[in-house]
Image (cartoon, rainbow, N blue to C red):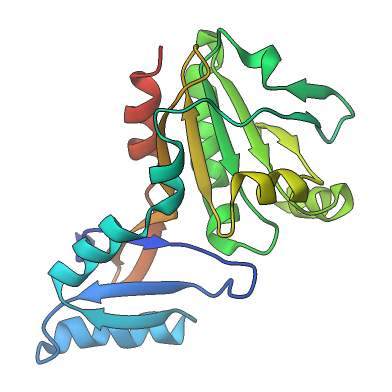
Length: 218
């Protein structure tokens, strides 16, 4: 039996903190709600109980990267993927592009790989380019990919580009149209809370959000 209990939580990792954190809105006098909180805490989540308005307001205020880049050209780059192929922003002109900024230290980043793979599978025949860029070394990135396949073009050793763009937390997703303009930025990994067989689970819920954005890229 599956019952949806929570609407959505957004997880955001920083280099100094890769712990799973979730903000939950609910009635602390409700035993069912508090049981859900305790279950998540036992699973290693740090739970903060807040009002619904606090969740809405904090999400609206946090998106500094989004404010800096939506409507602007993607910052230029020349980078090499893990197979040694050079990729430049100039080469991508005329194509719709999804750029996923992630880190090997970010559990939510890695947990969304299956949903990213679903996106690529859906749009690979439409000419959309899918890039996943990490700041860590090729060795560290490949170690993660061995157990967690990602079917994007993966770029490692991009710490300087992260610094240039101002990426200080992960994941961050740029959606770029065929004119090289960033039309949307999605920060954090979206999760929904579900009660499955009597157990609270936090399930990655990024595919639908990203899919709607990519549909509108030209």
